[in-house]
Length: 126
Image (tube, rainbow, N blue to C red; front, side):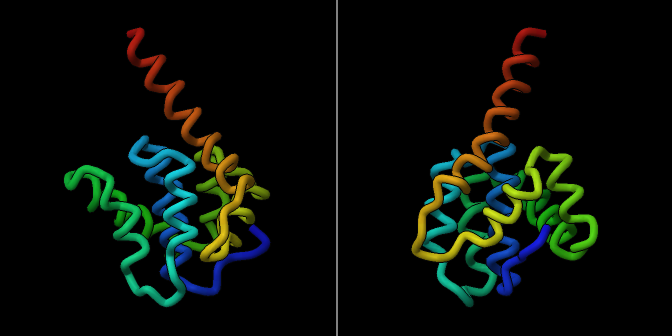
């Protein structure tokens, strides 16, 4: 990953968005809209805003994953790549600025949603 957000709370919000889309709690459009609405220096609120759509039982697990990923910048790019977020998409997501919308960010998250739907489709056939 070439560029990361200077705001740790925003960085965590992007990670929360990736995980929320991956698990089907948010659509890619919703996640990008929430990220665009987040203001700098909002404290812990950005991540909490994104995770409020997840079931209460899943929130602690996702928060733990976000904290773990954010605390390991060296492994972050590799972990996101394993989830299906390539380096260019990572740069796009982490450089998304407040009050902007990004078709590229929506596309980056759409690949996660598509994978999540394919897994659901495969398991429903079992």
